[in-house]
Image 1 (cartoon, each protein chain N blue to C red):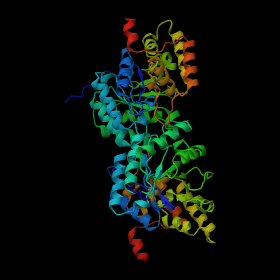
Image 2: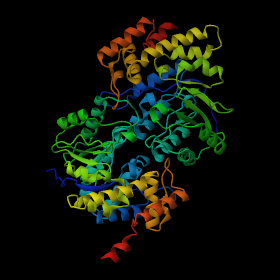
Image 3: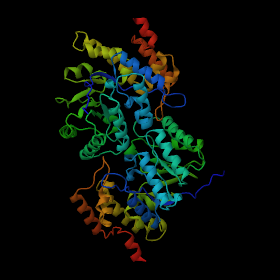
Image 4: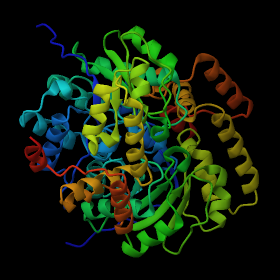
Amino acid sequence: MFASLSPKLRGVLSPVLTPFEVDGSPSVPRFIEHCRTLLNHDVGLAIFGTNSEATSMSVKEKRALLDAVLAAGMPAARMMPGVGACNPDDTAELARHAVAAGCGGVLVLPPFFYKGVSEEGLFRSFAGMIEAVGDARLRVYLYHIPPVTQVGISLPLIERLLKAFPGVIAGVKDSSGDREFGKDGFDVFAGSETALVDTMRHGGAGVISATANVNPGGIAGLLRDWQHDDAAARQAALNQVRAVFGQFPMIAAMKAAMASGLNDPAWNKLRPPLVELDRIQRETLLRQLDALGFQLYRGQAEEVAAH
Amino acid sequence: MFASLSPKLRGVLSPVLTPFEVDGSPSVPRFIEHCRTLLNHDVGLAIFGTNSEATSMSVKEKRALLDAVLAAGMPAARMMPGVGACNPDDTAELARHAVAAGCGGVLVLPPFFYKGVSEEGLFRSFAGMIEAVGDARLRVYLYHIPPVTQVGISLPLIERLLKAFPGVIAGVKDSSGDREFGKDGFDVFAGSETALVDTMRHGGAGVISATANVNPGGIAGLLRDWQHDDAAARQAALNQVRAVFGQFPMIAAMKAAMASGLNDPAWNKLRPPLVELDRIQRETLLRQLDALGFQLYRGQAEEVAAH
């Protein structure tokens, strides 16, 4: 059997927010609708990222969500599920599932419980996962987010992995703001749209941005137009929106915006240890977005009306 | 049906090291033998702790190990399995399994991926776990180990949990060195034997100590004799042994000592992201232990010979 390879992931991806039902289970219909909205705005699906509360879900829950999105007809080639867990079995199971489904790549956190671990230990962790998946279609994006994991992915580690697994190690999501490690054939995605124009100018592959959940059109539009004359002004406008969300716990703030835009309070729900914004925070958020002239996405009805 | 309650956990417990086979799977025979050795020295079994590499194992692997130890006849009442995971399903599944088996308690890490989380979020996490288990026999020991998790368990959080779940919230393992939160009916276990005499003097329930894996007799002996005249000298001797191990990555150093004492090199294996000591580290460790006159445990043969 030939390994069939998707085109490489490019552009804007969003760590897709995971909506929950009142009982705390993932809300499959809302998740599917949100994935469809993002794709309609040309935003790819980095499901199961930090902003998806992925580590707050079991592998079983994540497999079921991935299956549901695929069954709803979303293209696997536009997906980069996060699969990294602290234990190798869970990481390999979800990665295998994603690869078998044809996902464009997988985003892999380092194991994040132990701190101060060695480069050798992290190398073995990624190598073990690649060998456990054992599929030539696997494309690994390394997830460098030291502010959360406290465990970073160093340049020497990347070089060692690239040498050991050429073609498999496909790139990095760099949420550190440090874009030093661009290499030929190795794609760098910035972890925030505040670096969008800068990232593209330095040969980046795109951005994987939390706020693409709530501002998909604006961010995907600038990714398309980053060489236009108005790019700097549009970058500044995106940054203003991001800064408003950044005043609050980010995931809760984005969910509050979803709940408000879609007039669906269920969207406010988060899994512990994260909590929803309180009423004053929500009102402040919405007032500040309004002051920027920022329009919340109001659902499919809006798109139909716009055409 | 009446809830049948075990006597409360007391004394010295060890976060039981998890031996692995060459292929990386948990070594059930070695694990059972090690658990038996610890119990023979009057050391309880805090299996699946930080020093057990518990977060590097899947729930399925941990369930199987617990079942194997129970099937080998070890008393569940002497066990405090670690069950805390970042996601609520995994935590509840392992906790339910432990409670159904009759374990004396469970040790629960807070979810440790997100940093800077609120007291409310952590309260919801523990409360959700307790409600998901839904068994009056559940005894929860809160696991406070901020140097690793970066997420602590504050005194106000403990008070809130005690009020909401009296009888269920049984105590804390405090690996912070901060023993401020002793309360009536709430048991404090120190996270290191270096605080043993001090902990007992302040009304502590005992210690859950990594090095009880390699020095079970010495530590359990002092726990028994902490009010004897020679306690200070014995505490100092324990501290010297601990300090030797503490110069190295602790888990790797303890496994090296097990491998040497039992003449079983397989004990050197760790799961990524942790790695074994190198040859020079191993030799240094063994030389320093020897200089202290410290005897490595040499297996069942030793015990028979001693009787």
